[in-house]
Length: 290
Image (cartoon, one colour):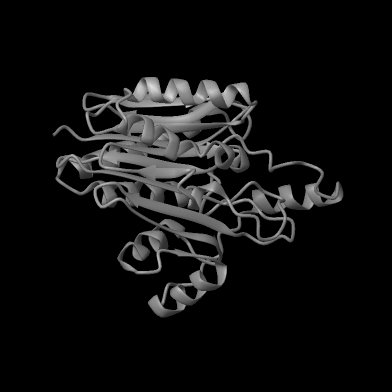
């Protein structure tokens, strides 16, 4: 089967802030180029998705891993999940801190009987695995937090045009995997849980996979990733499932976007906001959603 890949670096209502769309597109291009080469060489969809997410987490441009936004108390707490569609196995970490790649910890939990861990459990797992302590804070994110603190955190979320990252891949054996990682909404209440470590925001089966980005509460309220996958499983085309699900979300004034891929190799995406920073390889060439 011809491999397919789609990745995203966030969504929002501002395209030109934070350096504009071209630098973000270049970052996404580099990831697609490297990871699609892995798929062509026979790597599994889960390895490809984890690698894509790691590369995006390591890029301070995006709100995941290095460059994550700060919560209201000035701490970084990150969430990530992986769903192996072939095994229909979900694993993730919620509000993990002091590590470089939350997606790697989420992947590790694929082999555990306890597959979703909160902050304390994640910290204990890191200790057991001897995961190096890492500070993902950047000067830009700290400056945002300091400035917002002056206004007593009146903003609903950090003003980032590129944010939560994710990937969905189809490998040569027809296996689908989805992965999503985020630093959160920014300035939120301590302990707030993102959709990125829930099936609402990251879901895959043998039939389709979806990764979401945007306002997590809206994604959770829609149960969006799961909704799209179930509709495709029930016989809808991927495009129709995405269009119908976003029409419903738009009617309720939701604010998010999603990338999607099915077992036939069809690629789709949708948004209720202005911009979705995403790139894909359709088996022929690299394309972009902007």
